[in-house]
Image 1 (cartoon, one colour):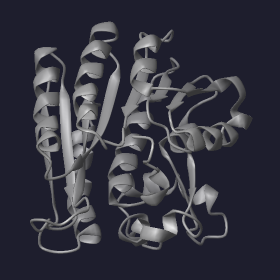
Image 2 (cartoon, rainbow, N blue to C red):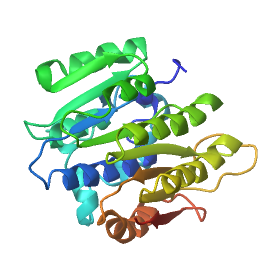
Image 3 (cartoon, one colour):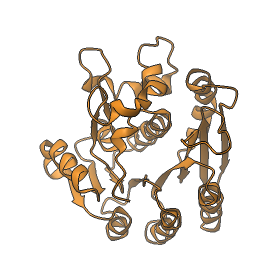
Amino acid sequence: MLSYRHAYHAGNHADVLKHLVLVQLIDHLKQKEKPFWFVDTHAGAGLYGLDVGHATKLAEHEGGISRLWDRSDLPPAVAAYVDQIRPINPKGTLTAYPGSPWIAWQLLRPEDRLRLFELHTTDIKLLADNFHAAGRRAMVTHGDGFAGLKALLPPPPRRALVLIDPAYEMAAEYRTVVKTLEVALERFAIGTYAVWYPILAKPEAKALPEKLKALASQSGKPWLNVTLTVRKQAPGTFGMPGSGMFIINPPWTLEKTLREVMPWLVEVLGEDGGAGFAISAQAD
């Protein structure tokens, strides 16, 4: 579990989907004056260089954010996402990419708060350094984000967006995601929960979306599931051809936005005839 470093994958097609959705969720929460918390159970380092270190080994950003960076025809939702990456690339050349906590930090208002968890011994130091200037507005914790989330709920403002984005290196993590959400909904049923997951040939990966749908439905909560696949996955090959975002208590506007933007993303990020997207949802 502790071998995973998101720096290897920063800015790839999965980050594009995850962070596009994240921007939409935060913008929706900001429409009300009451403050809210952003909780990231697996925050990573927070910021990543694309031209140095780990990111250069796989250069996965070339199939993700790099394909969007210089385009002048970005749909509004995509432009809102890309706009969160421009401040850390002030010279206009794409050399850095923000993780989920940094994107949230840029979007949050002074009255909102971040609660960030990271277990990796190297990334937690980087995360703490990156958010040192945030002061008391951002609490950075070295520990298990699954357990940490349970202790936080319900949050004092009674409004929160929770991002659950583990490495999924072990089969047990898939089960833990479902169990953690089950407990979270019991403690804080009105929160917005966003779960990122990989599309892989593993049985546990294939089963996760259906388990999340069942949990949300049994809890009487609306949900939305969106997937983006950029290529075919030939039998016996490795790699992640796509990913998904599962949201419990999503904004009512999110489905419409995604149906407008996902065909464009498939066209721009797709690598072969296996590229595509899917959206399913259930209202109250």
